[in-house]
Length: 346
Image: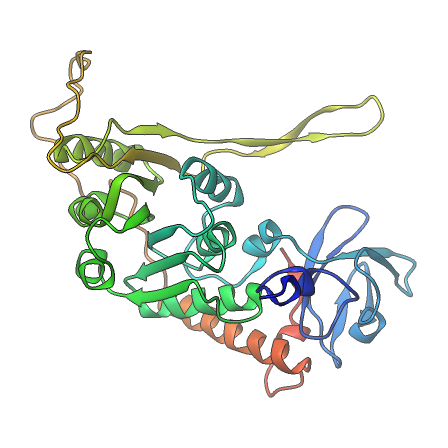
């Protein structure tokens, strides 16, 4: 397939702005708006307004001068920008964590990867970008409405159905045996409330030396997952970490850390699949006193379960469908408030 035809490739990231694609507008104070361009669209904010046709056909990186004397910088959003502004029902994995998953999980071109807990599709896009069109990503999601939102977001980013992506609904332990052969998967990524419930299924699917990676948000989940990985004796000693990102203010000699930062979002845990019949080396250090209470309980609240309202899910699914219409037609004048009329700050 020629480079210009690759999904999400050069053809969609170069050239003048076109109707049906998104543009990120930034004002002089750094406030950002994500706009889905359409032939009949109109952008309006307290920093000025303009018709989308004034931007369509102009090159990436253009500056719009509004009638009110303000300036707006227009750029195609990067994947990290898109993830934070796209419609979502479930919480997304932040770009800083997705980057760590791709690197520390060693997601390589042509890899066979299983992702459990697709959410709104944020991590799926990073995984697909890394494994390419000749790899294979199976994303398993328990809730059909979340899977629909993820499919809409991913196809919107890549400009169509990705040939390496397969989405299935259901519980991972039930779906995986029918989806893959034993010892045929290179990487398994678990983003779910109780990832320890799927250790046996992951061990069965992974090739020897394959990487198991879990994303968890609470220390209770982290502890439970690590202990169950050890107890299973199918994996190497788990490694856990978190990443924090702090921006810097840059103005002449006034160089200092920003007052705000992206702190804790979640923990990442990795382990490698041992060869069948192999037992892990025995740990030589003693656990701290009280590290293993005799009557520890694991309630849904303790592991961080959060409910998402049905009303929000219906709204997000509706937004995804409306956006798809604008992307395909370049027109936002369908009945009801279309995406072209609902630009809002990221």
